[in-house]
Image (cartoon, rainbow, N blue to C red):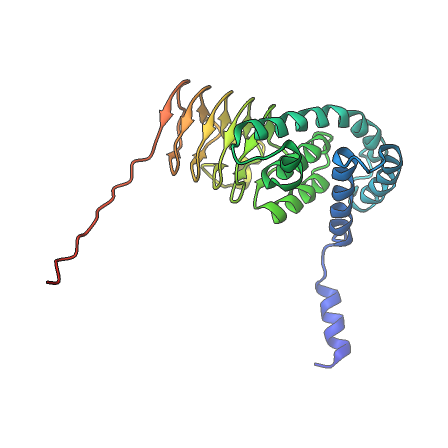
Length: 264
């Protein structure tokens, strides 16, 4: 097969007319600048909001495939929500600083904690997701996922003062509901019991009530599963049914230690 034939075959098999990877790169740049605008004291807010608006218009041009959706109105509504988002993120940072004995300062939380970064990008993406444009929010949270190991679907609903410690390997599904003052550790999964396309519009992921702590590598599955308030879920627990309030759930491993015979 000659070169021109190879080129023609590739062109024939590029079947997605809206698949423009520069949308992904531009979303990542937008996410970085948005984060700095909210948190970096040396980043001018007014100037950056104007720049972000221009970037957002480009993203909408690339991602707004449905011409009936009012893409042009999203930015104005989104900017109005940013102060509220920032207030929530400040509460998240305070929760981390207050709960983690290893934190030396709240500035360290903002700059060095992957759990905080993942929560921040989730909250910024979630506000866009609520407007009915899922692709850009999904690209934003996937960008955070790649950097932190935390995979939070932008459709999840998360309350105030959320704390993810150590971060890596956390998965929070699209229809998960997490209420206030919840702490989770590395490797926690809030997932679905079943994976099927016809379940798309159903609640597939669990609800976590107020003041719950979930320790490392616990797995909680199912849309009808509710973890009651003030409960503690121990490490490596596997839960597929609801847990009453004020409960402690733990996994007891069976450990057998074999003693080698005395060589002498």
